[in-house]
Length: 130
Image (cartoon, rainbow, N blue to C red):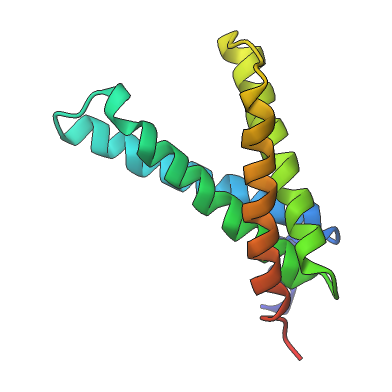
């Protein structure tokens, strides 16, 4: 049993990378729930704008929390790096896949993601195992 647990356990050493993985897993779950909501109700895609921002905000917060929990100290720093990288990656995906132009307001989105990640990191660093 110990051998199986060791084979299938994935331990990422970097707090930022583990936070990004956790953030994208939460975003995947949120996108799945939103697609079920879109499929099962009479909502249109334009009605889901607020919910999309909520899913991204929660994903960044949980990613920052994970980065802060993995960091020994400075959880706000690890969380803000996680949030900033998350924002940059999401904007790059939108730019490359959807041909959406980059605007100055996108920098505000990256800054907001960094702040939310920093808040998650502050909470996460206090939830470390002693």
